[in-house]
Structures are given as C-alpha cells and as structure tokens.
Length: 153
Image (cartoon, rainbow, N blue to C red):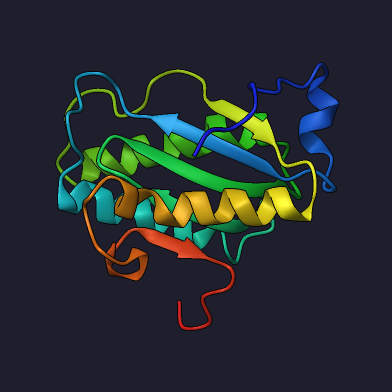
C-alpha cells in the first residue's frame, strides 16, 4: 500500500488540533536490529496506556521489530510534545528491561488523515503491517498490535 506524499504541517499549533488524526511512525535506532521481547513488551504496555490517558486519543497501534506505528489525535498534549516525552519515557522503560544504548531515531514520520476513509485505510494498514511483513498470518496473532474496532483488546 502506498500513501500520498508526506504532509508536514506548517505550524506547531496544528499539531495540537484535536480534530486532526495523525499517523506517526517512530523508527528504532540503526543499532537496534530488532527489539527483544522484554523491551517490546515494556514499550507496548506504554502504548496501550495511551488508550486511557488524556494526553492523546489512540485509534490504532502496531509495534514492529524496528518501528512503531501510531494513529492518534492530540488531547491534552500536542503531538510534538507527546512524541518527545513518550520516546524519552519508553527509552527509560527499555533500559529498565535490559536494553543498552539509544532506542529511537530522532524525530518521526507523520501524516494527517484527510477523512473517514483515510482513517480506516490507515488503521487497516497499521494493523496489517505484521501480516504484510510475513510475521503472522492474521493481524490478531501479532502480540503488539491494537485497533479501536477490536472489542476484546
């Protein structure tokens, strides 16, 4: 699946607009070939906490061996502040889980969903990521993926 060109917003205030949905991708540091299960579990717990936080609203997420996809909307924190604080926090969690060295590359890739169809297409892309990478046959078999339409998660 191919997406349109990356859409960078011109002003920081746009990253605080609760009417916008963002598809974010965080890449692991080049030295991180694949997150260990213990580190991935610690990071994933932090991702799932966002379902109940007031910082952002989480719609879909998938932690892959070398990157993370989030589909979120800002609430109490703008997206730029959220990503800085969250990456810092998960780096500490990774260290506590036995990881040494940097976890994340600086910055993030982001794009704004344009409409409901784009939201659904993006969410499907996110949860199908492990299937497309031939890691599992069904997206629900991947331990580090979640989407709002999954009632049992």
